[in-house]
Length: 210
View 1 (cartoon, one colour):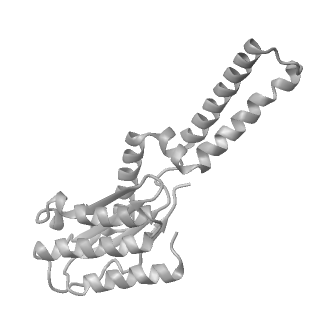
View 2: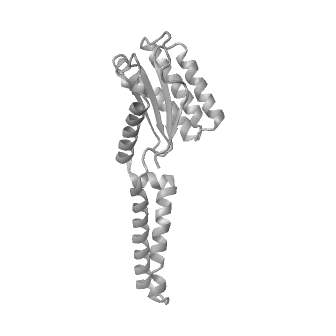
């Protein structure tokens, strides 16, 4: 998802943003927040149903001359094709998964990263996670309690918009860097100016839930 050069650009953006902040920002990008096995099964099931319906309707309109033993092979072949589409075709996969399931998965994965990576363990409770999940086209900003007490949730909207717009054009690194800058701007406006110790580092987190 991020080349070595892109990782360095995002790392530099974090370092610049934190140079005048007492809070810490951690950018994170996942290709997808869940394996979504149901998309594979849903794709296979839909393809099998369509294949069966096509065979039935075709036979009603014009009887098929092939033997049943040959025709029946079309059904599993369609199932395999549907499963492949459900796994690899991202627009179809999003449709099969559904909005609610995607939002639930992204929110859960963002919380896991927030706690597993120690963002909730800074001395001043001032860590902020910028979590982007590419398949679902979702961005979540999670802040620790010190930041939440001073920054309203809508203050992160600019960061979410910046990341979403760039990612839709395939510019993931640019989106992360822009989102980090927007988060830093919101933190400064809330009074988190100054300098603090870096407990979390500047490296972006890259992951994939396969």
